[in-house]
Structure formats: C-alpha cells, structure tokens
Amino acid sequence: MTSSHVLIAGAGPVGLVSALTLATAGIPVTVFERNTSSPEDLRASTFHPPTLDKLARFGLTEELVSQGLVARYTQQRDRKEGLIAEFDMALLEGETQHPFRLQCEQWKLNTLLLDRLAKFPHAKVMLGAELLSVKQDAESVQVEVRIDDQVQTLSGDYLIGADGAWSTVRQSLGIEFEGFTYPERFLVVSTAFEFADHFPKLSYVNYVSDPDEWCVLLRVPTLWRVLFPTRPEESDEEVLTDESIQARLQNLLPKETPYPTVHRTLYKVHQRVAKEFRRGRVILAGDAAHINNPLGGMGMNGGVHDAFNLSEKLVEILVSGASPDLLDRYERQRRSIAIEYINANTARNKKTIEERDPEKRRKTQDELRAIAANPVASKDYLRKTSMIDALERAESIA
Ligand SMILES: Cc1cc2nc3c(=O)[nH]c(=O)nc-3n(C[C@H](O)[C@H](O)[C@H](O)COP(=O)(O)OP(=O)(O)OC[C@H]3O[C@@H](n4cnc5c(N)ncnc54)[C@H](O)[C@@H]3O)c2cc1C
Image (cartoon, rainbow, N blue to C red; front, side, top):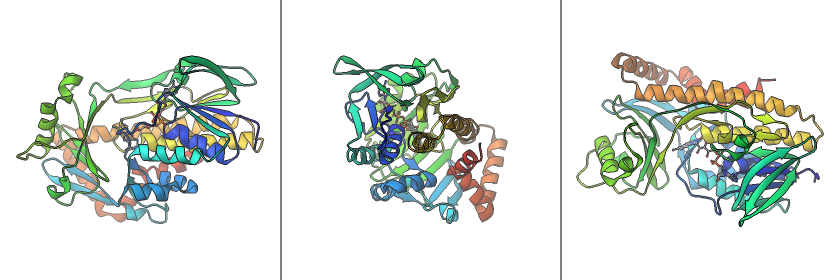
C-alpha cells in the first residue's frame, strides 16, 4: 500500500473505473460524487469489444454480459429501403476476446463498480459531495468539497477530473473546451413495444438513415431505445409532449394504438475536446475531457479507455516510481484519439445518417453494401467502429 492518495471528481463510469484500477494496485482513492445515489439514467447502452476485454480483468465483463444482450450483428438501414448492410462481429474473432457488442445500460456498470470498490478499505466513495474548486502547488492538490452544506478542504497527490461534460475541475483550471454544439437536440424514447416483430431481420443495433428523420434503434434487455434528432425550432416542452413523441414513433412504424413509453429524455449534443488534458497534478478524463454525439457509442467507451490508460500510468508513478512526465504521454495519446478518432468518426456517422443529397446517400449505401459483402473489408470496418484501431493507434503514440 502506498501513502500517496488520488482524489477523483465524479462517480460515473470513468471515475469509478479509475478508482477501481488504483485501489486494486493498493493506492488510496477518494471519489466525490455530487449526486446522493448512482442514477439509473438512459445514456450509454453499447459496450465495444476492447472495453469488455479491459473490464474482464476485474471479472466485470461476465457479470455485465449476464445483465445485457450479446449483439453479434450491427445494421445500417434506410427508413424506406430497409436493410442496407449487416456486419457480423464474429469476424473480429482473434482480435478480441469478446467479438460482439454488449447492449447493456451504463448504470449497471456503475453499480458493479461501486460494489467492487466497497471491498477496499482504502477506497472511499463520498456521495452527496460536490467538488467546488481546485488548487495545486508543487507538493499536492487541494479541493473544496461541499457535503451536507459544509465546505471541507481535502488534499491529495493527484486529482482526476471525471466530473462529466460540465466539469467543475476543467472550469476551475480555466481549460478551454474547444468545439461546437449542434443546433438540434437528440431525443431518446424507450418502449417495451417489440419492433423486431415488425421490421424483418432487425438486429439489436440499427442505424436507420433518412433525409427527413433518421433514427437509431437499440435494444437493451427489456426495452427498445429509439434515438431521434429534433428540429432546432422545436422547444423542449414541444418535443417532450405525448403528441410529439407518438407522432415520431408512428412516423417510424404506424400502428393503431399509441406506443407505450417508459422513458423520454432530451440531450444537447456537442463535439468538444479540452485544450489540455493535464495541468500539473490534475488530469481530465472521459466527458470532462471530450464529448461527442452518441452515434457509434464512443463516449463512455472512449472515456473508459482514458480511465485505464490514466490510472495505469498513475500506478506506475505512485507504486513503481516512474516519472510524472508519463502523464504527458496520457495527454498525447488520449487527446489525439479524442480528436482524430472519436470526434471525427461520430461527426462522420451523423453526416452519413442524415445525408439529404440522394446521390451521396446512394453512394454511401453502395459502399456499405460492398463492405458488408467482403469479409476482409468488413473486418477492417469493424476494427474501426469497435474502437480496436483507436487503442492500437494510442499505443503507437510515444
Ligand atoms: C443519449 C446518449 C446515448 C449515449 N450512448 C452511448 C453509448 O451507447 N456508448 C458510449 O460509449 N457512450 C454513450 N454515450 C455517452 C456516455 O453516456 C458518456 O460518455 C459517459 O457517461 C461519460 O462518462 P463519465 O464518467 O466521463 O461522465 P458521467 O457519466 O457524466 O459522470 C460524471 C459524474 O460526475 C458527477 N459530477 C459532476 N460535477 C460534479 C462535481 N462538481 N462534484 C462531484 N461530482 C460531480 C456527476 O453527477 C456524474 O455522476 C451516450 C450519451 C447520450 C447522451
């Protein structure tokens, strides 16, 4: 056990994976989480193969698989033409121990991580604890945290800012969040209605392009989640009315009775990357460092990859005595991946799914059909879409 101490802001998947990696190596950690409980929110539902490979070291993958759905196939569809191309993730056998996508809600990972952390006496998770500000000097980092209306000051050797898109840590350091926000918001509706009985050969992961209203149909164990874009001129209230939700679902698949709905959530969508991922003893990871649109399921996965990369480096520094300069390599690796890979691919996915020009749509769809028909091209495509390429690229950055 080392006497060094790592503070972590945020008990999302990124903060908790970092905490578990550090605690497992004997490093004392304290996680501050503003919420008083871990929310069962409707965000990520796709785990990519390399993320499952990495989580397997904690025995978490088996448990997640038992709580999720194994998606062997992913599909590109068109609202009018139906299935365009289907990709078989089994082609990734030999590249990963988990040649499939796992469809499982992200809060289930958080719950498992919290259970695992509770077994380490040197890992503390403080719920209802809001980080307010950050200061640092050559020896340590100090944070102010509000707990039960009392403000406490705590200090540690390093601070990981895993406090999400509106990161107080990032703002406290005045680090710019470069990029843009899309004018439209994304609506996610979940329903127990069985779409697979109506769309022939539907897989668990379906990107459905359309020039007027594209959508993504994602299966999780008990529900279908449908993601729609909204029009910039619609107000939040308008989008979330029963009439508007039913109209969108009926437009996708008309039926005589209204759709039963379980959740409805509206999200702002951004493509942004922090100008710096590290300043001294403070390091950003996950949504605090980069955010992107959810087409391709790369936000949480990329954030979990940040968490492993960063916490393994902190273990080398704090346990094996490596130079703190190693953290600059974290920034070089993960910032490059956020810009060149995660943001570039998710932005491209959005352009493809919403393309209005009929010629360009036909060309892209022909390309997708050709890739799906060729196992070598399909494998390359799947290596890219499942983030295997991104991790290999990160490893190649000195
Ligand atoms: C509709 C939608 C679908 C998505 N689907 C996918 C998908 O399929 N696959 C995928 O990979 N990604 C997906 N994402 C993205 C994914 O949800 C995020 O990238 C992921 O949650 C980031 O994890 P994080 O731990 O960095 O941040 P968060 O999950 O946001 O966690 C940050 C935590 O910090 C806490 N916090 C914030 N401020 C403070 C403070 N000052 N003090 C203490 N605590 C604080 C918050 O309460 C929160 O618990 C999706 C996102 C959306 C919106």
